[in-house]
Length: 162
View 1 (cartoon, rainbow, N blue to C red):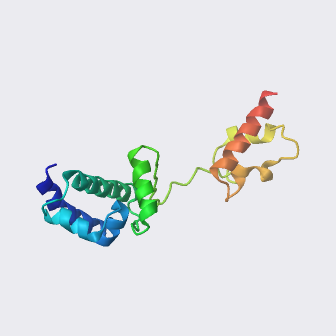
View 2: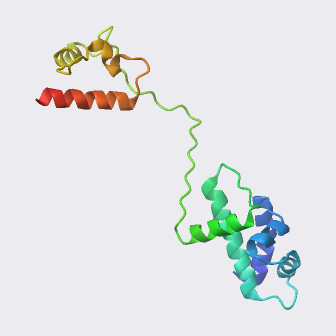
């Protein structure tokens, strides 16, 4: 990017991030007046400084994108600077899962009504697990979760192999 393009895009990008020049100056390690000179195109501003500010804003945008839909408070400058550095080095992994959609419920057979028919009844009846009857079967509980079901199936398979 050339300096004029960087200058033209920085203000709208900062506005999109809801970041003031004061906050950006703290993250970039410069003064607000220096930033104002960079953005205004004053003589005596170094293109490398402008590029560095552009890279910092790009890093802030990447952090915001990775954390979306969570908002990021960019005010703790040292922390943000560290996160930008880690992200650019590939040392930062941010995962946000939006689970607002209902998750599919695991299938739990209804042993009382024989929803699986004779095949399940035969497995449950022939289980050699000592002290575990059909009432202790996690598949028969309404509150059973996938872990309970998988553990029970594994234990049943181990016992049936013997």
